[in-house]
Length: 110
Image 1 (spheres, rainbow, N blue to C red):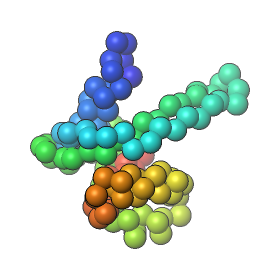
Image 2 (cartoon, one colour; image 1 turned 60 degrees about the vertical axis):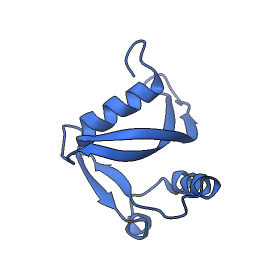
Image 3 (cartoon, helix red, strand yellow; image 1 turned 135 degrees about the horizontal axis):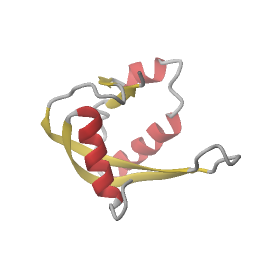
Image 4 (tube, rainbow, N blue to C red; image 1 turned 90 degrees about the horizontal axis):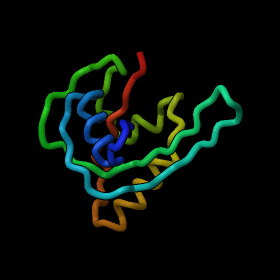
């Protein structure tokens, strides 16, 4: 997050920088915090948004190689450690009449 940048501005900017896609943010799905255990680690606050792609072209960046993955394939990945986020997304969809999971955009770290 940049100085004086709102979290939604950060999400829009980072999404386009890292994927090449432009999105319209809808709702905040969930918020997660991770408190560091020592001085050398960084505490994080993660906001997960429900969003809709409206422009751009999917591309790689210095951050990695983004790609679309179906839910069934996502759950089969050995290194997928965010099932709790996926479950919160499912709950969010049920509350907002979006029953279908369209896919997750994940970033492969290079």
